[in-house]
Length: 261
Image (tube, rainbow, N blue to C red; front, side, top):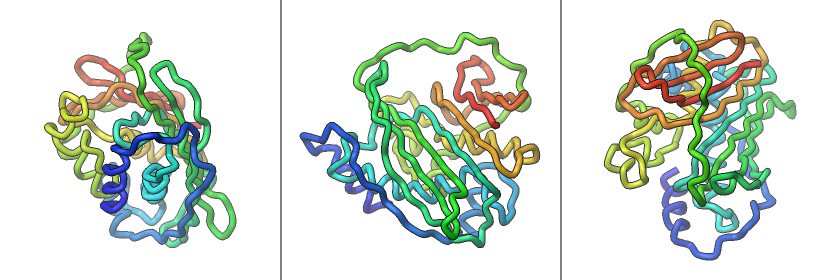
């Protein structure tokens, strides 16, 4: 990941980027490191066990996603991209003793009212059987666009989370996502944030950890990331009839909305 981030930093200065997404995919086979899995479980709030959380393969596929975006044929630098949505399909439970064949590719380039969006797709297979899929939607901001927020009435919280100020650094260590906006307040300010913010995928994982006892063997978890969750902070988690939200416990500003089906 250090090598990839060095390429990303150099690539940010590269002029004349292409206009289209690359027509290629990256693959690798990974074996789960149980110590790493246990640390991920602790950081995100999952129980320690040999079954993988549905969000864990996203972490395993992340180096491939960064490798793809660091290429000279990719139209955007990862620095400054906004993660606006993520959809995960777990087709069956995944065990820690199963090697995963991963593949990652980019698709679905489309206009957005604040710029251009695209999706990074990932897929995990075991012995030729697809067992997990992931689609992350990213926004490349090119204008301010609309700043409208959800006007829906806030649901009653199911729990209030105290989110520590070091959760960005702790999640970065287990995920490889060391974007400066998650690491230190001064680095976050340099990239336009008032202070450090939590990773969107940590917030999603924390939601699924809160629902761990209710999740079926196969399910889809689809979320939209909204306003940043500044850390340290207090977040209200709400869940009802398959839908869940995270919002600021004091101001009510929305951080995430999602659905499990």
